[in-house]
Length: 477
View 1: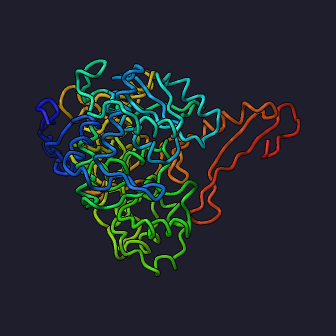
View 2: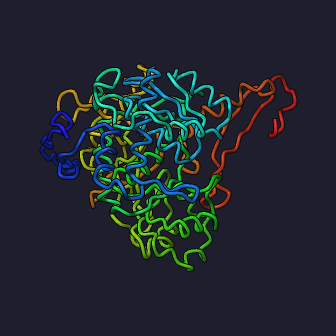
View 3: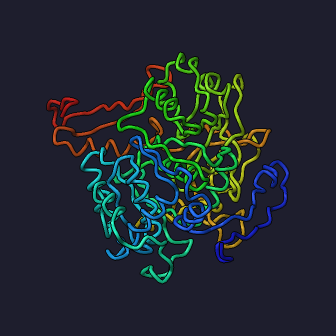
């Protein structure tokens, strides 16, 4: 990679009595800051014949995916796609979605994944807010472009509409908003090389491994699946359509010979224990995240494989902290230590670090930080602030999560400082749900809360009051 794609080192601050030792944040590493398309092109050139994508009983090699994505990228450039321009991908989990993501990156644009299964109103809101220059929603057309006669070389700087730099956005992902309006998070290319290299090493991904594409397209865990497979020389396995739960999930893991997967605890809990007794001999690494993982799931799944608890908001390029391999009998897992080139701080209301063991808000700084929120400068300034613990000009993201350092130098997650919750791994602002309910003509006021009548089975419950003493709407309305 060229020199302007390399990170620079920043010396860690000195220890202060009673505060977390500086060594806990001594994470500097030299890594590539190359854009996503270039990272994949390097891997494809290294192992062009190795399997890269597995879907619908078919395999595509790295070389085939590279040429397919390049043809689509040139087509997108012709349609005005380039740096700082968004392309919406309204596609289900599929080979076409993965190729489209790579193609948008190669064209210099930022891809916006939209799950076609989401409600029409939400899809329309994201499209109106992001104002994409192109919308790709036809898998057949994407396949036809790949089979066409267009140029199949990787677009260079001379092909792009303007130069592409690491600071340009690679993708946009919408998260729930407290005012009822989801917000788009702009994530630049700069942190993807760092995350990919770290994930490949920590999750122990090897060329020839098979990573499951479990996540919904609009959930940033899909970025983890892409980076820890295609950028590591492993294959990305696209499962059949529909939810992956219970015995069906175990069957996919077994029959598709999956070696690595990120599965939220809520989905993991649906797998009958007897499915594990039948054996998943090739399933070596299980990543849990997106919500708290209970101790009983660690006890059940840790034996026989590497189980890693990972934590991170969309605003920090998927993962900010992770544990080492968890062992059965170790209790509820912490969220671990920071990734390479990532620094984390637990602070009070005045943004001062708190002592080890004290509770505060978790803040994240480093290579994976997002640029901010799309067209939301006020909210960006509120959540992405100057980092008082780093060099001049550095920023940190205030997560709104409560945490504390334990004596072993690991972080423990303790919930939220606001009304955001997580259900099956998805960030949900209760205010957004309440605002949607309040728009119903027969709802005067609404309050939404989370109930857990069965351990591990969280659900949203709404309480509504009709206007003027009328009759409240039924659930089906």
